[in-house]
Length: 95
Image 1: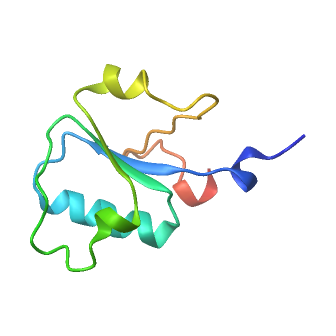
Image 2: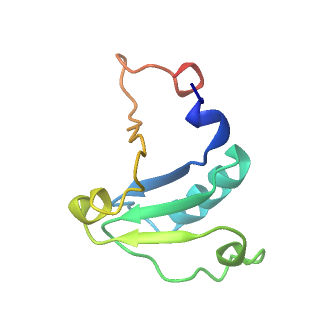
């Protein structure tokens, strides 16, 4: 059996980020983690002047109006993983 995490790709995103800086942190986190793309759900942000590395040309960015829009566009076979700060949560490094 093929381990899809070993051969595949992953993206990270945020839902209803509170500030434009959230998008910058998301982009940097995705690059540091080796993600293939980023996405936002809900509030959309314009291009940031602080994007001196032209991140939009280096990593695809997808925006979805709401969670249903996002869910309906998941790639076939994608595994959806939610991350939340909670004392019952499994650390992402151990997932």
